[in-house]
Image 1: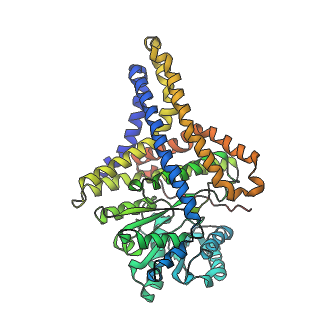
Image 2: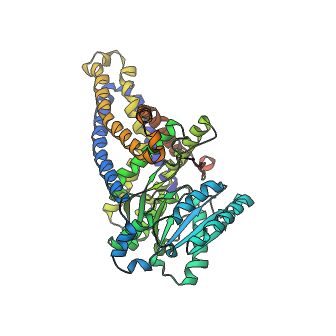
Image 3: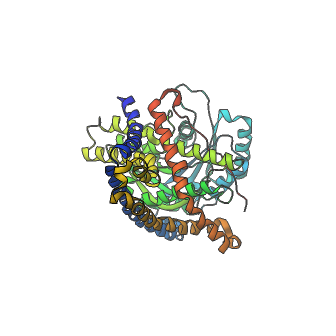
Length: 495
C-alpha cells in the first residue's frame, strides 16, 4: 500500500508528460485544445493568486510598522505567562552566520526573561561547532533567560541525520533541563524553530504572542511567518534570486488563503501539542511540513496554520562560484520537492482516521496531489508543450486553422500572464530596498532587478519543475534513490 502511494505522484507526472507527447503525435487537435484551455486556466489562476499576493504584501508592510509588544501589553497581564523556546539547529556553520541570527533574536522588542534559546549542535559537527557555540553563548547568553547548547548524538538507530532529528533532541533536552525544572506549563510555551540563517524581525515575538492570545483555539495551531530569502541577495546568481523571490511570493499567496497554508521552514507552535504528537519525525527530510500533517491527523482535523503576515529574513542559495551556486540551487529545490513524502503519510493516515471528516480527507488528498503534479509538469506544459502539436501533428493537423493560430493564441495568453511577472518584479525591488541601501537603490539597479524576470521561464523549468520531477521519480524508484537531508550552504553578506 505505501509503495503504491509512493509511486502514484511520480507516475501521474510522467503519464501526463509522456501522454501529451504521444497524443501530440496521434491526436494533435485534442492536445492543442487542451494546451489552450490549460494556459487560460493558468492565466486566471495567476490573476487570482496575484490578488492574494498583493493583499498579503500590503498587510505585511502594515504589520512591520506596528509595535506588537505594546499591543500585547494592552491586552493585559496574560502575556507574562507565555514563554518562547527558540531552537536553532546547526551543523558546520560559521561563527558569523550563527552570530547574526542570535544577535537578531536578542535584539527583538520583547521581554528577554520570557525567551529560552537552544543551539542544537550535531556530534558530527566536531570540535569546531562546539567552539562556535560556546563563543556565541559567552557573547549573548546573558541577554536572555536561558541559553542552552545541546549535542545530538550521531548514528542513532532509525534516525535520518538532519534537521528533524536535531530539533527533536534539542527540544527534549530543553524540556528536561529548562522547562520542567522551572515548572512552566507546556501549553504556555511557544516553540519557534528557525533555520540557522533565519533573522526574525524586531517585532516577531510580539506579533506571535499577540496571535496566540487572540486567535480562536490557539493551542491547536501552528504560526507561520513569511520567509524572505534576501539576506545575501547581492551575492547569489540571478536564478537563485528569482527562485528566492518566487518562493517568498508563494508564501505571500498561501498566507492569503490560510485554509491551504502548511508550515514551511521557520515556524512556531505550542510545546504541548508538539509533545502530544511525539515531536518531529526523525526519519524524514521534510519535517517542517510533516509536523502540520501529524498534528492535523492527531487532533482529527482540529489544527490550522495561522498566517502571521510578518517576515523573517533568510539566505538565498549561494556557493563558491556561479556553477556551484546553481548546483546548490538545484539540490535545494530537489530537497524541497521531497515533501512528496507527505503524500503516503496523508493518504495512509488520514483515510484510516475514522474521526476525520471525508470532506477534509478529500480536500488535503486533492490539494497535495494537485500541488505536486503542477509543480513537476506545469512549466513544461506552458513553456514547451505548446509547440508539440505543430511539430508532431503531421500534415493533416498543419492544414487546420487551429494549427495556424495555436502559436498566436498560446503566445497571447502567456503575454497576458506577464502582468504577474511585472508585478513580481516590482514587489521584489520593494523587498530589496533594505538590502540595497539608498546608494544602490538607484535607476541602474532597479532596471537590473526588473530585467532579470525575463528569465522566469528558464528558471521555472530547470530550477523548479525539473528537480520536482526528479524527486518524484526518486520516490517511485525508492531504495538507494531516496533522498537524505541536504544542508543548504549559508553565507553572510556584508553591507
